[in-house]
Length: 368
Figure 1 (tube, rainbow, N blue to C red):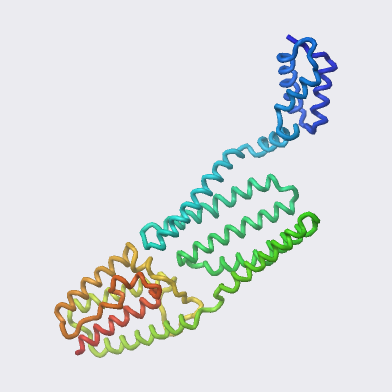
Figure 2 (cartoon, rainbow, N blue to C red):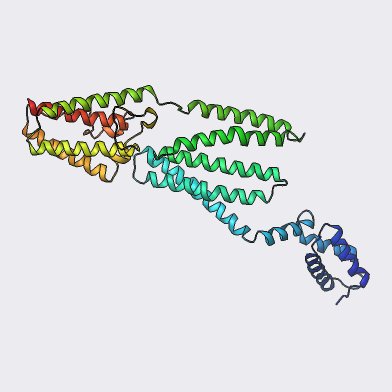
């Protein structure tokens, strides 16, 4: 077996240091490995330097310093590869859940809400933080790490605010405005002034900033700061109908048990829709900013209490109409119509007005 001389051993160690490896333990480990390989593969009379160059190239792709960088990364970030796998899995799950959830929602299939919420939660609370943790290891300066942190927070807020808007949860408007303000007045200036300082990134930074300003401008444009006047008009119509209903009921309550059941079911459905809007009741002194017109499919048409109430109401109305030939409650083009929930105009305020009109038909029929 070939035996390296002291000069060759010192040459190997010095060359490892010249190639950028500074960790002493890593230097010694590499030194031992390379010496062992050379002593096993070399024979008397072989060219040492040529053999050494061939052996050392096995330890790196571009330069030997890569080993030290990877070692430091593994020592300071022991879960690096596990996090990379989690990143890929969470990203794939989020994308699949969002695509299928959107399709389910488009087709009015059950499970759309669960898919959308789970996809958005995993994307914002698992995928984006993992991206931040992995990318900060590649960031060269504290300023770049700060930009990555702000970008991650903006992305999380953007996804969560979209989820709150889709699910009609309270706080969605606050989160949406926070996202826009943070993007415009914190993220964009940081990105612009960091990139414009470097000549090689100056042009790309300017172009990207202009595009981002355009996107944010569109987002601000489609953001509703004040409630639509049509929403207030529908609320006023609902309140007027409620006042008329109260006056007609005051003149004489129905004694028909089926009619009483219909009135009770209508009242429960209206209360459920109002609660779904985040309110306890709608009175004459309502706050226009608190009224948001959304689809009532979760509280009325989907499975659950609202769906059961709707089925019970349909049953009782059919019973009533079968015994009151001349004073029937209309079913077509009302909340009792099966096609009603599939119409684009079917909002919570429309449903409230529609239910109140059914009650007015019932009361007027009883008086007739």
